[in-house]
Amino acid sequence: MFAVLILSKMKTTNPFNDLSLSVNPKAIFECFSHEAKSVSLNERVRILKDIVVAGYDLNKVIRTYLKNKVALEDEHRINNIITSLNCYTQTILEEYLNSYKKEDTITDATKELIKQFHDEQNILDTMEKSVNILVNTIKEIYKKKTYQHPNTTIKDLLISYINRDTTLYNEQSKTLNIDLNEDILEHIKQRDEEERTESPWHYYELYSWFKGVLLQDLKNNQISYYKSVWQIPAVWSYNSYIKKFFPKEDEDKLKADRDFRQERLLDFAEKVVNVLWKNQPLFDEPSWLVRCNYRKTDRQYEMKERLYADNKISICIQDYEEEKDGVCYEKLQKGEKVKKAPLYISRFCLLAKQIQVNDILVISEYSDHDIKLGLLKKGTEIEEIKKEGYTLYCLQMKSVYCGIHEINSITLQNFPILKGLMPHSITLSPIKRRTNAIRSIYYGYPLQNELDAIPDEEIEKMCHEWLTSSFALESIRIVKTLMEKGKGMHDIDVLGLNKNNQVIAAQVSYTDNVSTIKGKYKSLLNYKYADKYILCTLKNKEEVSTFMNIDNDNLTIISLNDIWKDFNNSRMK
Image (cartoon, rainbow, N blue to C red):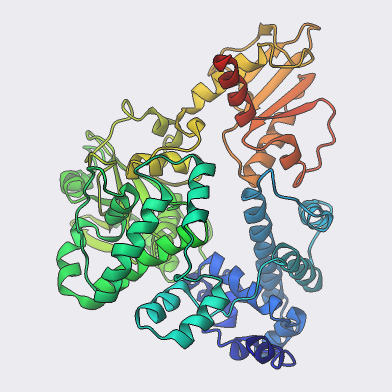
């Protein structure tokens, strides 16, 4: 019935009406527009996927959009659309590649799409080209996934479940392929075995708690536990979620405001359903670094202690900078474009925009104090503090404590892994590497991959040791080191000679991000004095070859996980 309903609407060119998409088409087709600022990139990709999978001709849909805007000949708007479509294609492909696993099979069609899109000679400079490769990418990547009505969410399913609306629940359950009544305990225990989770972090323990406690709390709109209890047999993943969904700073409001409490319970239950039924990770918050290192000579230094005590991060705009930096800030907050905006302002505005969509983990650094690690809750608003001569723009962190022992502040000596994640001389920066290590410190859960806990400099030493050992083939085995670690070139981490006096240059990068690996590959080959090149990343040669043409016989790609396994296996013998 539902499929027939969708098919009957395919003759139109307005899927926004047909599919009841409550979003301005401009937000989808022009990603730099003000309208797009209120819709996350992932949400825009999802909407485009729904349109294509439902059978609409995207070329016709976009031409209808341009016609309604009286812009069929508007080159500026058309170029914006082309750029937006290419951005969506890149997002889908990179998300697919970053989630690719060895046991997955990449079809020839997918490989061709990846190479076609990433081939620098292939310029996607017309709307037809950009539409076609986007449509082909969506159809190929999502061809095994069933179509979901865009208005059906896990929260809708949970509401129908607790309201005992069986008819609506069954329809939503079929659409989402999630049945809360199904016993999935054996599947979850198998996941525990595969991921080698340890009690009290087992998924099956979280499943039992979800069934026995959280669903009842949701039905009764009550919260059984506002504070974590870490003594076994407590479920530690559930306790970690308490700091995420029920921060102590929100406790009074949670107790007094029924609607606010119900929304947080729904957020909590939605997260657990995604973990247990959709196999998502326990924690997946993006991470940022924010420095509030105001100097004694700065006017705003007087606010340092208050900001630290109140767990607030901030940027400061001086009154004498108002005409330049202040205007940039106001324009960016309104979603307007600004050329050459100061980096600290543009990134603060980006952070403020991201927390309207996701919770964010923040490493906050204050002069003369230890580091704090806290949570910016989704929906956090900017607080403006006006003082004589300057204005502070602040964001309030919550649950500012780490691990199961509730450490209020941390040091780089105790957590050296953070040192390599905090770029120097930068006020604000998103952190895209080793985010699992940051979440592990914050939530206190054990890392599945031991490499995640090893600092970059130690990873580089490990690679150097591997390249000088019998594990390495003779052709790339280093018998003489030419450069000490940390005393050389920016793009070379290991430099030495093999037995034939050929120069071996190695780049070590603890990443599986496609764009980063491509950049490391190019920078490594820019060193023209080497005879052989080694690239060590979290992806192996087979995985890298799916998104890059590796046509250099003198290049060897080695997986850091394989290096780690070699050393571990040798110790066990």
